[in-house]
Image (cartoon, rainbow, N blue to C red):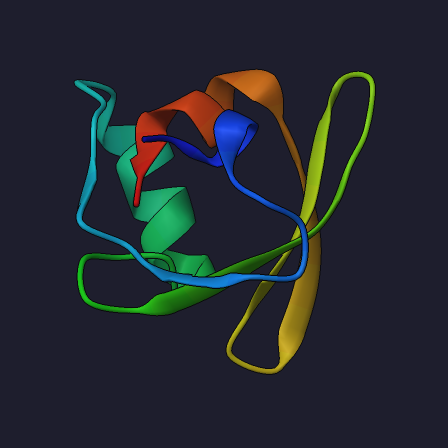
Length: 70
């Protein structure tokens, strides 16, 4: 399951990041988004979703949300 289908307010553990784009992978890693890390979908938006990783909240688009497997 990826973040586009995740339930709002429920905490998930990231299983993997499905992307061949090294730049995207590095960006997600800089946010603290990597395998084994906890992530929570705060809300779903039309173009993506708001997620909480560690102590930060980030607005990510659907492409990023689909790449994050929980």
